[in-house]
Image (cartoon, rainbow, N blue to C red; front, side, top):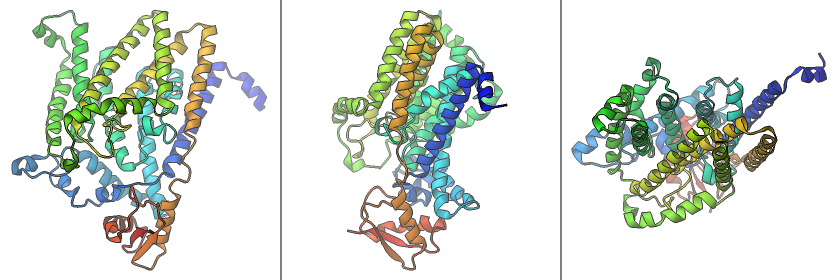
Length: 480
């Protein structure tokens, strides 16, 4: 069969699915290339080869010893994410060296886990929006195409970033958040579609009851807020106004799952008060709140990404209300809950302390839960309109959506070769016979900044040797 005859034999639907599949494969492939070309950045060495700041987390994973002795240390409520990061980079790069050289293995390990996290985000969101678990289904593919360009590796990343440029931040923020979404997925399926939580769900959800609250700085607060809003929504929908009768009407699975994870989350937040990170650089709670408005404005209007997404969300909501469809009403109701969640979450951020690298309290990483729910609503409302608009209006709307997605896609066509300097430094170490070498100024190797004292590279050199990039420990420093 000739190519021309082949395309004639295809229906418009099949052709659409083919192009959707090609687009998704192309987008994920380019994301992988971006991740593979991204520097490792700072903090990694001290986490993989635990230094004296990180080691206490491994010695006291649940914080019990700290509470009994009164001794404080860094990140007392984040053991599982510390363990995941250390275990991954202690083992996966060495395993990958079966197929490639040591330098490539490190960047490959980083790229693989970032891509897997992005795939999980897109899959869960597309599954939840479309109602289909199969990536081969039309509704799933269309939904995935709508949301995938909003995952920015570079482009608008500084405000919309989900998968971080820093692999450490990716483990601390994106990874626990996407696992939390996996935890809540059966809960929301029960709420919205009446699908029961099965034994299979309990099999992975019960271990996460303990793991999630001790996995990253944002997760406990998100758990508490989402759980509170779930019970509030159940109460508003219930015909029972007697509290005792209402609590009896709540599904037993919610009590089995949500009460333990919330109690453990409260304990995690309590442990957080013993975090010694930046304790000497604290500012008052009132001043932290005073910086919120500037942080919100910077987050939402610094670049085109967020305003464009919010513009579409506003337009979509307006159109959905005009259609007056039961599913549309459900969507607008979800948007109200998203707004309440965002408000409560933002108001809690100042209580999380102050970091000098986040002077405005809000930054892309702390704002990530809000970004994710907005991406969800963008995808859900866009897919709804594509499915329900009349033909003439649909064509114009789809053209506008394609233009929007092209803007996001083109903005993110960056990132190739960003780790060239770091790679060259690794190559220099690999072939050096000296015990101390210099690397170019502004070439950051496993660091955030220039390093002019070679003794500060001790842990980094140990990790580079552990990865078999060098055959001995080679210390290094930046040229003046």
